[in-house]
Image (cartoon, rainbow, N blue to C red; front, top):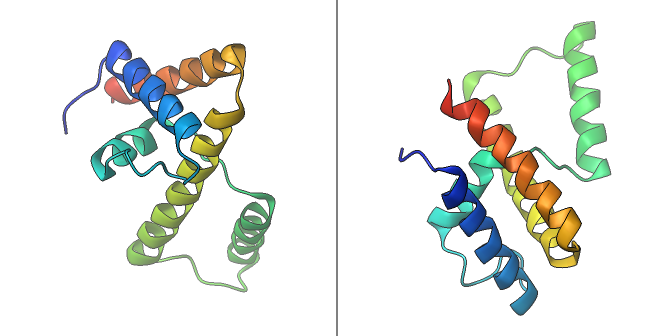
Length: 119
């Protein structure tokens, strides 16, 4: 996996924002699958309320012992589903964010990128 620099990430998020503003589809059709996967690496999880409640209920069930812990395959599938939803929510937010909000989103993604680059 190629490590992205802060500038690479900023450029990609700026490109994604421009595409989101120009294209009503989410994710924008012009944003490649590779670019989408890169963005997923650096965005925070952003689930809608229903998904977050389902996830919390599942965690509580596991804690209480009424559900067995997820196996590796279940965890992988849940993570993929959650990151896909997060990408859609993030890109939707890019469309409506003003410049200050966009800068904050970029800073948040940069914090994630920086923390992952030191792992």
